[in-house]
Length: 622
Image 1 (cartoon, rainbow, N blue to C red):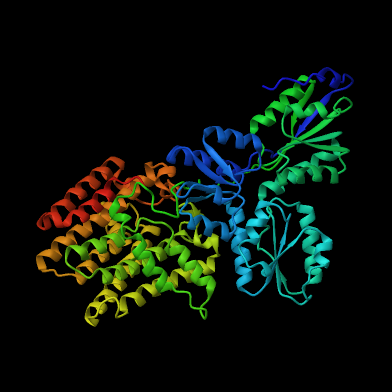
Image 2: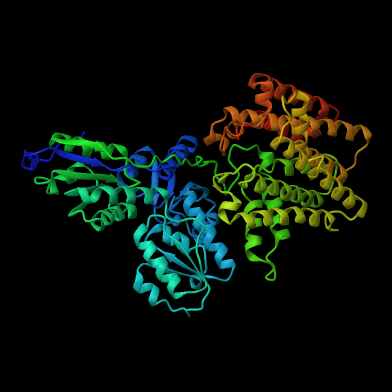
């Protein structure tokens, strides 16, 4: 508890009841809690130091607490040692910052707020439509800097006031679109949008307000109580935009005086002596303990707290995965890291950068295909081909085609009509980073690209082999494979039996695992006995992989798993855990691992890589 300033007695005022009207909601929002938790989780998983570019939230008290845990805050990624774990601010980062982080080999966790990610997606979409983007906000705010950094400089203009709208060096017939800083004044943004629409007839805006729900709610709460107060106190940091907007909202609502304060000691400088009614609110980045210390100080002056009615904020964001995205996690087995760069090279070459193609579509395809996954299925194809004497170049192309299909399945899985995920491997999903339509088309294009790669003579000189690869992949993703399995997962039969569950898993997950093994066999030398043993291995491995996933979703730690957990439970999905029980599912995983080992016995030491992959699938925590 902070002690009262020396002149506390001078603030005393006896006549009449004294009240503190407590605005609701106030203080931390879900996005701020999520951002702080990301730093704490990263420190827990990776150990200190963890580097954070820019203040994760605008509050010096919070930053000091994180620094004491081992966080190091920097303003530029050039200050971060190469290869270090790095968290990018919740305010969002320019594309150039991410590129620089990639060049330095930083292991990046992008803590961008989902609401800011939505704006990044919007401005990119409007730019692709040929519209000039007008960004309403404060030019020096990190969110505005990050958002303008998504587009070429001449494609976006910052609008701060009515004068800046009228002086924009653009013809009035210019097709424009507007976006708004999430912490901007609700009232000011409305006036600026009205001015923009009055000047530019060809104007569009977001389908829903860009201003953060927490900003809107706090400004509304302050506006409602400010006219009843002698003084309005806003708890927050001087660097916080949303804190300053609350002060402005109070004054605009005819409160005689409004002050921004960080802690109880600041009250010594506030003229409280003649105030009978004080209003109190707090910025979305103000910690609860600072608010309580101020309230306790006011308690001592004889003020009685009165909670005001306000909307309950039920929004919750999924936690940020602290498994780094720009490099393979260091705890992956060597077999999953050896060939990543080679597979990615084939992928990037296949996607290409042809100027006659749509740049946005290609960007979305690259974003989806290089999201930092395990490359488990690609490693399977490579390991089988190597064991059977197949050509490495051919195997790399097959592996790239498999990763195209896997990426496509994840892009579509994440869509609102499917699993509705905002994050994958610690960064916004494709439909959040771009938009839903682009995500669908990027998935479609990746699927088509897989067949392009397999049918290309560079994959194999023998057209018959290429034809078998194409046919095998088509069956893998159709009604008897991925698509059929997904439908069974979305619409399970009543009282799902063990047999029905296994049939679903063998399609949904097992089909692509089996294709990876079978494709590796097509590239090498095999006989009937070899094919039978490896097909048995592939079937058991695919089922093992998904059952382990079910256990992780039920019991895993999101910080370690690298994605949201309990998703299946939340959606009442049938899984190995719900049908068989957790204990039986774990026993099934071990039995399937033994079956994989048994199937590989005829190959001896040459199957060591395949045994490693099976053990990883069974014992993994990510």
